[in-house]
Image 1 (cartoon, rainbow, N blue to C red):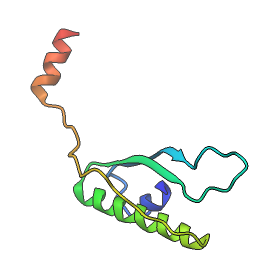
Image 2: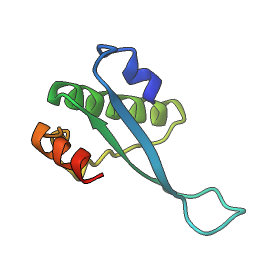
Image 3: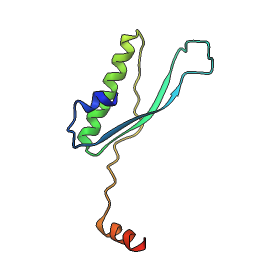
Length: 97
């Protein structure tokens, strides 16, 4: 999924997608009725964040359709701006160390 989004963005604008949780039930010998996939994605610019979100929805739903399945995409968090270090805090850290 990450490579799909990377084809559509400015190379100087960093974004990261992480698929961190997969839950398909407890039975090892049974094809599950449903699967839950969870993770995070980050981007520096809000426009890139929106683009990444759209790309993820598109890829997930398209892959489900290819396998004759249904997919529901639910983003539970909103956009949080990237952390940018302040010069004064950086200087304080250098002095402390």
